[in-house]
Image 1 (cartoon, rainbow, N blue to C red):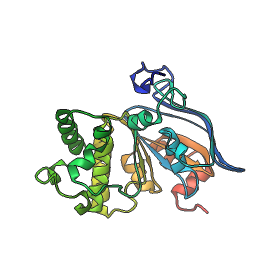
Image 2: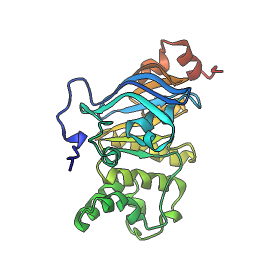
Image 3: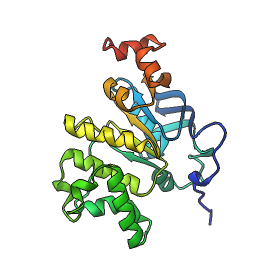
Image 4: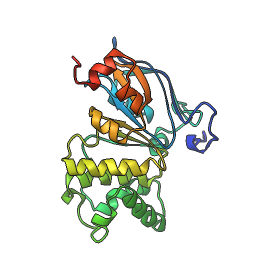
Length: 263
């Protein structure tokens, strides 16, 4: 039986934390991502900006091998966490997705209790009841939801508001203790109050883990990201500290998008 190594258990490589190297994704003759190279530091928020259809979602789905769930896509290049190639055939994709969790645009809660939604990943790995209790509470606290549900953990998750459901999805991802959290436009369907709470959660979480957030909202990127990567037509146009990219972009395409003159 082949041993399945844990990519996050290895010593950090000198080059970086999460490294994307010459990443391309194609569907038949169509290129979705074209030769993207990007380093994502630990304990930072990296905002991925770009117009609709530029490959933002495909890009983050490559980071935890979810792209493999879409038929007909061919991937070239590499994604490495702490020096380990995540596409190494010896690594279980399910383990990659625990180490690099993902929260989608629409909340995906299950028709069960708040507690069991948060505990879902822990049940899959047969964690003890004591560990489940501890990690669920910790995850709900870190997601900013604990004070709102602590007295009614048995209530249906479907009864929560949209913003609460999204924070519950974040808690479910956090419960299995990921090193990276991927957020795919997590506030696009929320009201301003729900958006503010998610953004506050992201700011707290950056102290512990790396976060990559896809957003089309330049203001949101300015509020919560440390670095910004701008994609256009599947290519990485430029990347750098948020203030540099949003206030002093080097490329005309970036400036046009930021100033709303993009066509």
